[in-house]
Image (cartoon, rainbow, N blue to C red; front, side, top):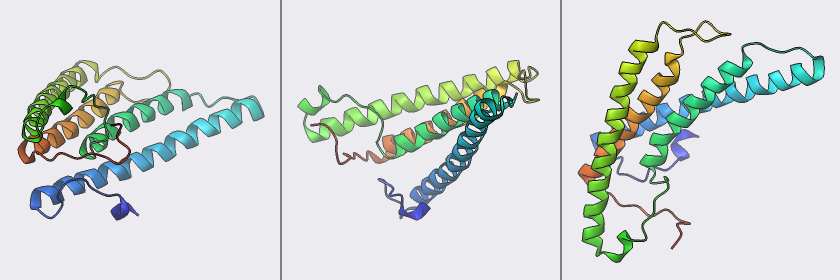
Length: 174
């Protein structure tokens, strides 16, 4: 199943294989976390409206799972060039200048992603002792998701900066 998900970058090189492995780990993590999230939120709805009983930890754990899903999906979108991009101005340049602009913007995105990941480390240090209200888990786990997502996004942006791969997805607006 997971091998049927196409990679839009070269996976024949050792670097490409490493990135493909990273993407597959992220995909599996997303699937498992998403199953948990849908399961606990569905159970909460059934319990609340069917039996007039609430699962006290469902809201916080569902919210935490949602944050993890969102931030682990960001690097996958970046790796597939599936993120939102406005290229109205860039399309006016020649293909070689477009590749240069893409590499520069990927390098800037990588720097920003790494800065966010580093900030998450600092935030985790400050927030680690603070516990969530209904589950005995640190609120810093919200920042852990952001940090991992931004680290993986930064790595993909470095790959794009180095390789200069430019991919148009089918269905792109023209």
